[in-house]
Image (cartoon, rainbow over all chains, first blue to last red; front, side, top):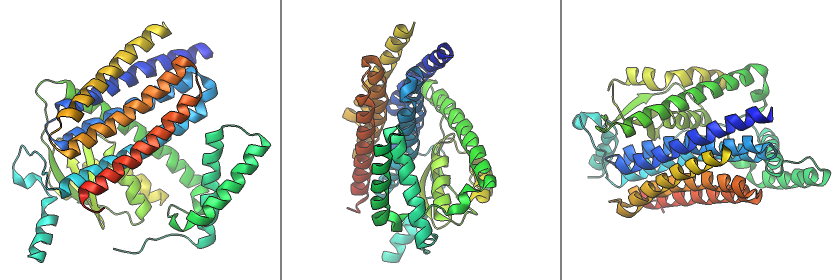
Amino acid sequence: MNQILEIIGMGLLLIGSIFLFLGGLGIFRMPDTYNRLQAGTKATTLGGMSVILSVGLLEPDWFIKTLVLVIFIALSNPISSHALARANYKRKNYPYLKGGKEYDKYREVYQKEEEETA
Amino acid sequence: MEKITSPGKFTRFVMSWLILFVVWLMFTSTLAVQEVITGLITAFLIALFTSRFFTCCDFSIFSPVKLFYIFIYFFVFLWALITANLDVARRVISPKLPINPGIVKFKTKLTSDFAKMVLANSITLTPGTLSVDIIDDTYYIHWIDVKSLDPEEVHKDIAEQFEKILLKIF
Amino acid sequence: MLQIIIYISLGFIFTGIFFSTLRFIFGPTAADRTVALDTLTTIAMALLALLSFIFNRYIYIDIALVYGVLGFIGVLVIARYLEGAL
């Protein structure tokens, strides 16, 4: 039984660290802030979750504490990325668009507000 | 802004006491008597001061049907998280960066604020999407590879699989 | 076997930290730097949990939890500040 847990733990550790690496690379390569958020948040969420879970599997006494960490990462990461994305739009950093202006539906909200104040 | 819908005062207090106590048990990860008694008192005191901010749910969340749907939701969410990561990995590794980003919008059928929050978090962790803002019942989503600008089709593509289950829970 | 896999994973994690740090240094706007900081927080949490296994110290997992909570609150405060609501 312990042997099986150890093999699953080692697999999760390897997969998780590869995803953490991909998160860093994605943040470096993507062209604008929103795409960086996409790559950074998703890859590091799964990567961090599986590395921490692998520690819990390799050392079964710590399993419950690592579960707390996993739940915390799954709840906190999307919230902080959402807050950053909205703050970035409010600072008028508009997203990089390949297909032209009609691909940005969020602009309407701010245009309406600007017309009302003007 | 509509008023936040929430259950009665007593229900909120007991629910937050219960959740805080479970969190305490997971933190200490022991069942020794003194730890449990300290946890009960601490959770009681914190719940006394913070239960007015509690908006999640009432006792009906423990009914077997809802627990079953929460279980199903967990697996749907896990599968979406794994496919999302493979998708992002493919885009990051390939040398030409195959992206076509944009911000799309759709309307949701959910009414409770907590359910909207859960849906927004789930959308952020699913393939190629990132929720930017919620205004009343309209979601604004940044999509890394836009397939359609029509709100109906966007709703079908992004949100329908989660919304079906969330409507049954909340 | 376990030792080799731990070395390989540490290599991957440190390469990820290297690229995030590059974005943290060269990021053209403040928001880009904050995104890099958020990513670094999650990577550091995973690294602390892994270190607690390598050194066999249970207390490092608590440190990872506290670090994660503080990093999360810090990123939220910076986001509110950038939004102009603080």
